[in-house]
Image 1 (cartoon, rainbow, N blue to C red):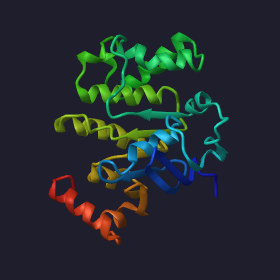
Image 2 (tube, rainbow, N blue to C red):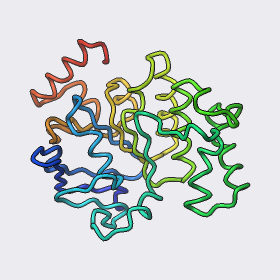
Image 3 (cartoon, rainbow, N blue to C red):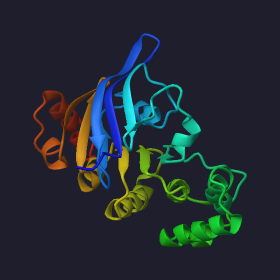
Length: 249
């Protein structure tokens, strides 16, 4: 068996006296997608921020390709060169064009030649149907287009692991599918991903494993057909019932 891209073992995270994550353990093999579901406040976003070293952890180990990245002595910037993270709120630079948003990190962080970075960005924009938007600014794009540009910006760094944090939560329902379609394409192409989402239908389509977070703990995990269609834990059952009643299944 090859080494998992990501291994999380015994992770614990608190903010003051508020314990947000506890005893979190899971693995993400190469070319697979692990999807986290759970109510707002269950710890999904915090978990992704811990993996990306944006938030420190209190206990546990995070390994990337077999190397521990949770050691406080680690160079977080070096680690993040291997990780792509897409946030709920796009986080595009408003004063920069789409092209400049995408090429900024490859040029400044990875030291890639400007023309080479622009050529790679054009290929990505073309692949996702946004090449004609290359010279526009984010405020001229729809929310769905902005989020797809944010995904492309992460892909431009050729990440080993892509982290997606509720990438449709800030979008109008009409725009949700164009972003989810982009992620489905990445799944087909073999991108290794950890995804936090409230879209259960999407989770069922792209996940190799679904983890249900409840009050900072993984209380159930397994293939989507099991967790989403035949959950064993009563807390998972209650959550999915509420989601179903809200029309998200």
